[in-house]
Image (cartoon, rainbow, N blue to C red; front, side):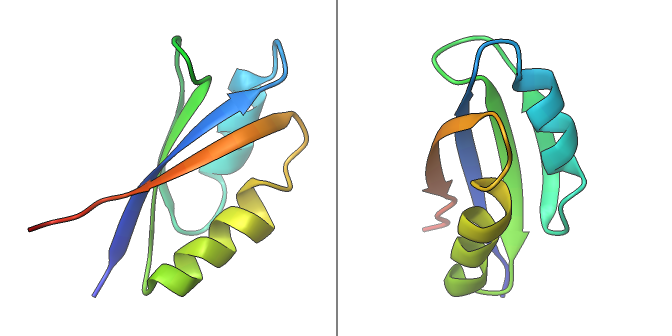
Length: 78
């Protein structure tokens, strides 16, 4: 089973492209794009479990310099 999520990220002014580039290098991240709108970067990530996905977000994504806020949206297939 693979758990997928979108991670919506707000960054410091002028940091979106650099944050997206750094996040794209993290294992488990399948896509990272800097965008315009209420969030600055949108990331698609996957892991083997919800617990592993949470660890990826907390220990690797949220620790990057320039990130001010994240919102994780799990993908649900019903």
